Image: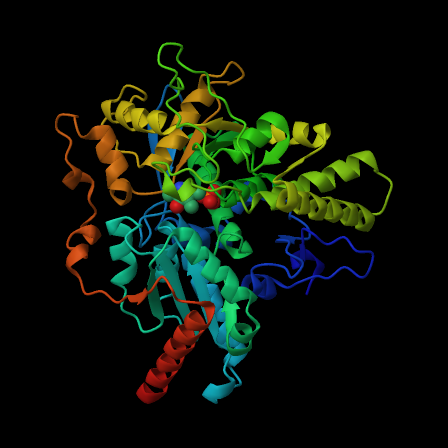
Length: 525
Ligand SMILES: *Cc1c(COP(=O)(O)O)cnc(C)c1O
């Protein structure tokens, strides 16, 4: 393992020998055993190579792959506002970019491990188990379908994901894909997954792997399109100034990739976090406190007492919004950013100590903060750390009402020059935040703003309909991709999981299905 490509945990802090991990380990393990996340030990700086980069084989190769998923549209020339469409993969959501890559990586590592083991008994085999409320499940299934030596089990709450998303998942008939319709909520699904990962018996039988957004390989794949979109703007403007990226954010994976790109030397002016009403990140940037409990009190209309931005009254826990892929209580990847900020703060305070000891102090802080989050529901960082976070990032919180207004105003050509463009609710949150950033006094209108579009509007028909049903000339058929036509009538494969199923039941089900797969494969070869 070379020093350049090694990884460690964000929570490493004990005085013993620091443990490093290979990329393969990081991809296959997902989460570090101390509960922390993996991060690269050092970030390569390519600032001096930037001009040559676009001619090197690697970006050419990355372009070839990424351009299948990516499109860039200029929404408003006068505002220098561009939309980066990341939803041209097989499931019409940006998660395809990372999960197509992850699926191939899993297969690559397994084929390599299995090169010398012919007997089926001793072959390395991965059992991927995931819970989904929609988007991750279908993107994971399409990333892993047909992959050798990988079985994938995706649990979703029966009847609680959108009809399109359910059809996308259950119409995949590959033998290694298993959809489990759980009679319960998304939280029940997630609890099953957590219990399975913590179950000694399960781990004895299966090599379990996760595909959720904490897997480093997903972040890595997403770094590419920040470079791609920068270079595509550079082609039309050789004097391009550092760019602002605006990202609809949930688990902080997508925007974290932008942070790594900027740390690598990509000229980035600002990374703008756009959240829905699940606004833990927005509140952190306002206050320096990362807290599960919302303290947000929107200005209320004095006449009717309803918040002026149309927010819902504040309840505990996750709020259901029109942008469900961003409905989170805490953002798992935020820990990685905090680790970098904590380390830099350490360097600034104690410039003369060895890097090793600064790394230990930073890891100790992360471990303590996340312990606090677990026990008290919150933690607060130092003011200097918050200042640094504010230098690179800005945040906006967008309500459901503002989301539908943005879809409408964009379609009408009121918010932007281009008319007739149909945004999905997640991308609309990005555009709403972009427009606020552009109208802020500090914004320089020569700076290009790239707003990331994370899903195709046809995936979130109800929110789009809510915004556009009364628009003359609007019909959903005009935005429906041909892959969605007739999807609801295709053959389905799904296993119902009754409400009273326990962990042993799940274990038995998974084991039986994996055995069946192996027998089928051995029979057919
Ligand atoms: C997952 C998702 C997001 C949020 O991305 P994070 O990496 O979790 O911040 C935004 N929009 C859509 C459509 C998504 O599926």
